[in-house]
Length: 120
Image: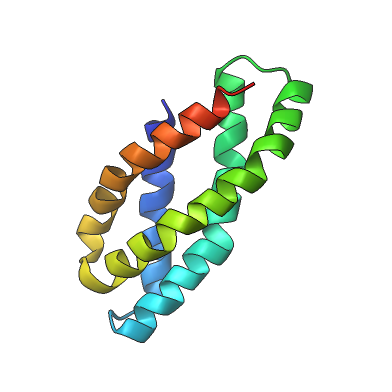
């Protein structure tokens, strides 16, 4: 279910990002990664975690408490993995393959998020 949310959102984001910062130089890739990780990633994670909570049947109050508990650790862990992946993705991978690269890495990432979401 979460991939129904994730794929279109991330794919659309890449198109917007490529229009906003055209090019594939190292500097362009760095700018894209900084926007992605500084702006998009925190917002996406802040939407993704409550979606998982809602799908797991959490009440609004429990979902909010779970988000406050999990978000900081998940965001820090995000920064261990995704900046390097995205820098390589934006520099080396053509736009039409970027989502596929991210989805491969997301198998590992979503396993972590699932584990995090199911911790008490």
